[in-house]
Image (cartoon, rainbow, N blue to C red):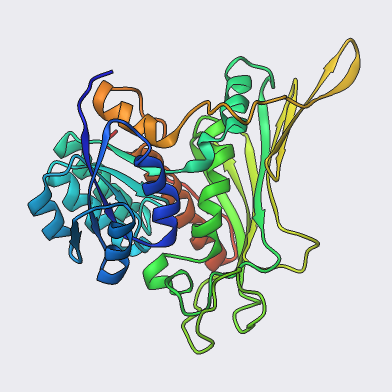
Length: 358
């Protein structure tokens, strides 16, 4: 491992940025935290003071012009991702961009094109790929434990989890969509990734907006504005068919009349299956003509794959990137087609591969 330090900057100084990106990057020996940028200068200053950073900006262009950074985290509202990422890449800076990579596939492709021109790296913040359970589940798949995987399920359902009416999350122009582009990107990505990002053939689905006018189903800590914009879906359900004849069904909701919040991924194979529900991994198979259940005893004190150390290693040592910009285009192409299917109330075919210019 080289002794080189990467000069790091944060763009978008919200609570998630600090909790996830800053708190993890500042633990790494090869990262020098240099500057913070937020359009709300008070937010940027607050983070800078906490981490003893002198350099604070309200304009990311000024930050990139003056600080000569090696890597930035982009933790802004979705509609800003593409412009900031492209600018950073073309100015010689590697990008760790929160999901979704952009608000649609065309915007995500702009980032891929800038990456290819610049020679720099882009990683999408798909943190659920890096959990110990997902790392282990991918290992089981890679050695053929499940046989041929023909179907998978994914979901993230909240009982009361609207991120505040009138916030950027509920404004389609700023977010690109509702729960599908918010929670859906996280947990739909998992079966897609586990199945090797197969080429989609068709998609069908529906969206619902049943809780837009409630004031009692917000996510804890998100108050919102009762008069604010809410022009996105709060529930999304659907089915994707792939060229290899596998299928994935999914359901996501910010608010539902259910017993409790739930996240899940299920895998169905010819030799075995898996269930990953609310963080618990179980495997199912057959041994000596008897169905068996396996609960892997994964040591929570050992991090099998660290998202932030991994990206640092990719930049310094050419480690193979685990969550690429091309993956982001692939996901947004699926989401674009899902919204078309939901709007038309009919299945929509994929006419070509999602990822180009790889």
